Length: 171
Image 1: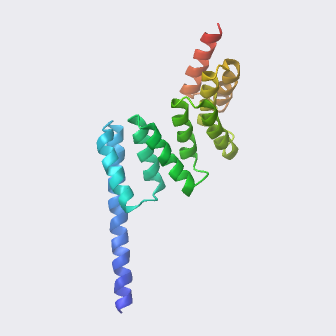
Image 2 (image 1 turned 135 degrees about the vertical axis):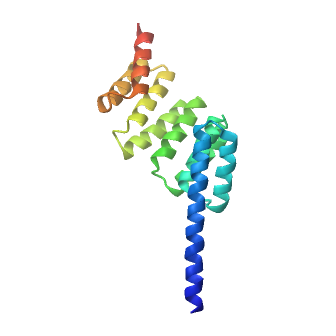
Image 3 (image 1 turned 180 degrees about the vertical axis):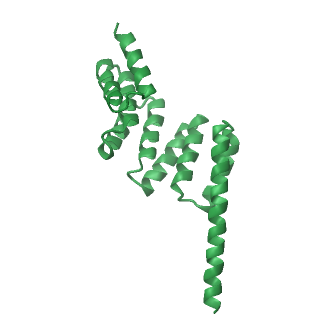
């Protein structure tokens, strides 16, 4: 009898914690959408104190850090996710964008290549690889990647804008 009460208590507690976690994630996400990143960070920190390996929270925390310009901390968050889930596309691509911002283009390209090994038609990885190549001065090659992304998704605005910019540079 006592065992079933303990199981019931664990179930109720677990369910209540999951509900609380979802509420906190929604609140943190809303704060991020409203660009109240400092408040969002507090929510993510609280969530991660309870669920330290919650991949969604770690990624969102990293994105929030990235939005605040805390690039090295964001990079640590993406690496933390990749230690848990080595093929997590969001973490791989986000890590690449941080490395790109840090002007570590070859490392960023390595991230995009890793993403493309998992999903060769990932338009974001393709276009971002093009951006890094362009920053390295390989404009013609970058244009091929923008065109490839557009051949998969002809409405992908980043690829179109980047292709237009590359075309203007080549004139």
